[in-house]
Length: 520
Image (cartoon, rainbow, N blue to C red):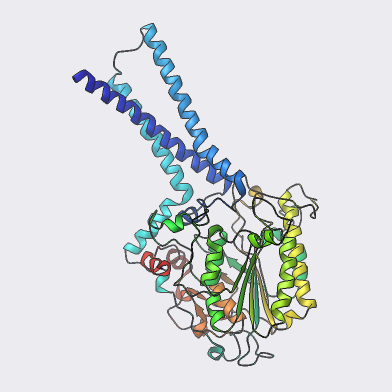
């Protein structure tokens, strides 16, 4: 009986040893794959994006993940098991193996197993920002300020600021008139891409020429903890950082956003966002994008927040569009051609409209369409230039059709270019501290920026005021409009915070606040 128990314990110890090795290897594989594919990410980004495969880079990305995270680590561990068993058998036949491993050998084995597992945990935790995630909860638990302390539901209406947002002249806009609004999110486009001293060419040249004379915010920064498309959309349209509704694994819907069969019906339903404000002011809201709107909950977000129409890949496929890349969706050339027609339709109606567009071509992995000539060593440089040509053509069409006479237009990147060792422009951008999000702003009555340094959270009230809708105290969400300076805003806003204080407030978790925003 004692011998049987001893064999059982030894077997359990050996199984536990290899299980710890396997867990550590898988976590190391996951960390390495995420780092080389996406760079460092956040827990919220992992929860909201990685589980949803369809429309997120195609089957190739999923296969690469499975191979790198599961198959290779498991294969290496299995090989080690086989080598170990073979070595033990050889030593047993030669008489060089003790009947029972020495205490020193058992201790060393335990240390190795724990070290491998801990290394995997540390590497994976560092890659997905587990430390920052835990710290965000700790800050809230300590009673420190969070974004919830600075959040306001926008109180809006043209009467709040006379004939439009502060910083814009009133000429041409009556007290009860609104401007149409067009917002174009440019996938991964930042100002640095226009620097031909860093890159092979000025990739932004076509759009810079088309928007000559337009205003721009010199420093439009990505908010702390952001850096992916839905984070950029939510921050600029709702004035809050994008976060899940609870702790890890607490919200099954969010963990599966975008995966087939797990599309959500509502997205931050209790937040007040741009589409909600504009719908309340009588606007017709339309979203157009080249990818599947189910991925990452884009369609659910827009439908939850006042958008009347959502046009995406499923519609383009049904309409017979052929310029489609299988891993993402419709080309920018076709998207902006369709958008021109949509603007003409909307502009011909009496109702004010808001059209939101999301480009696609500049998302990695790279794909060069036949219509785009590659004249650079890095394919993405040529692709970005071609995409900017399409956006520039769209802007020119707006001008030629007279749309710009009563329509505000905002062009901006959804986030900074993703940085990862296997992604484009790693060498050019890694380590740079001067990176800001590309933006250009047009208003029929001119734009006077009161502040030249804001992050994405303050774009929400800025967009509202650019539509000619007055905001009480120029506030919406956490942000303060870039059209208002400190003297025009009462105490109690983020403008009261130092840069260091603001950097601490934005990442703080505000768990109860977000549970309320997500509560269905």
